[in-house]
Image 1 (cartoon, rainbow, N blue to C red):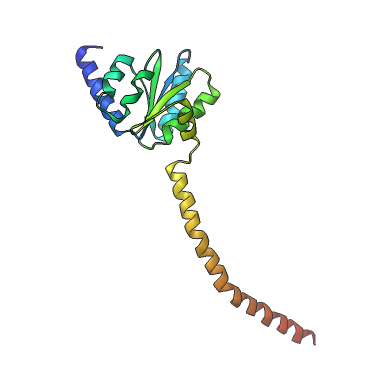
Image 2: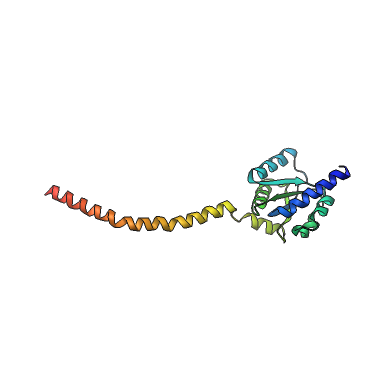
Length: 172
């Protein structure tokens, strides 16, 4: 990389660290190209991004951001996974690490909070923003359907009573 490319990369990575909801740092030593491509495609499908960056450049890019506390994680072959949704990146990384022992979660950051590997794993177990919206919508709709059922119940009971009397009269 030339000096201008490095400067541009650091600037771009700095913007990523500022805009991301969460950042996960992991080792990928020993992972094949096919595994990394699979990992990148899964992350892209979920709405996140995976980058492999030089540790020195990543540490420079972290300066002045909320995630500055994770600079000590950049040793060895590291990758950065990030997303605007704070749950997406940890969820995809942890799920992929379960099936692939070459990906080892080192830690991460969510805003100003520095996360250890257990913190990233616990963050991955939380429901995503879309799942929370669906649950909330379901909770809002449930009382409405119950109210409709209660309001409609007397009318249906009256119809059953009239039907029973009609059958009784027909039989007599």
